[in-house]
Amino acid sequence: MSNQAKEIQSFLETTLNDLQQLNRDSMFSTTNTLDSILIRHYDDKVAYKQELKSIRQPLGMLITSNTDNPSMSWSLNDLKGWYRNLLESMIAEIKMLGLPSKKDIQIDKSVNVSVNQNQSQKQKQEQTQEQILDIFLESIKDELTGKQYKEIQQIREDEPDIEKAKPKILHKLKEFGINVCASILANIVTNPAIWTGII
Image 1 (tube, rainbow, N blue to C red):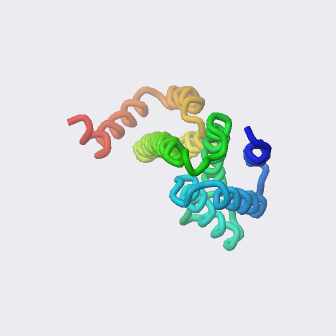
Image 2 (spheres, one colour):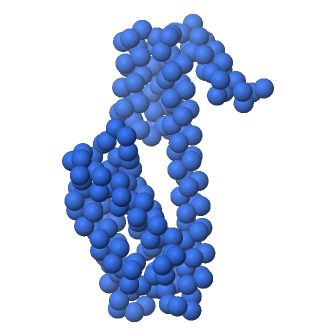
Image 3 (spheres, rainbow, N blue to C red):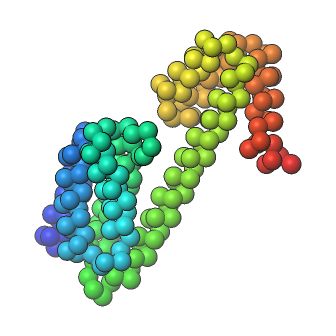
């Protein structure tokens, strides 16, 4: 591996390690450096450039609007997740193949397409899990008191990992009683998104 490839890999790894602590401006600064690397070393049609552009545009909007959690766009944490995936993909490629040259651009493109498909699948899975949780929360609104609903909502806010939240929600529902649980289950099963999948 060339010294230049090692330096780029070092920059990518440092950015990845520091990513969670970066604020909007610092993150944007690292995207400027990465953009320069992509312009200098990668083909114009490489997917990394489009991915970075898709991160930089909403990140610029966050900086302009001076917020990390806009109501109508991606949050800073969402953008950090996508940026993390991009950095990890580039690091893996550089470790495996080095920096691209004109003769191996085809290899570079195929690696990027594969990475994009994996990212898309992961994002779709996360959206599906979020939709399921939304169906559940909508289904319980009519069956729970305001206080009970707030307790379930608090679990959701405190524990974003669905697998870790599941036993906590189950415990709380057991506290509410069998009739409440039966009514909630009936609401879930008859939700149009679920019901059309059953028939």
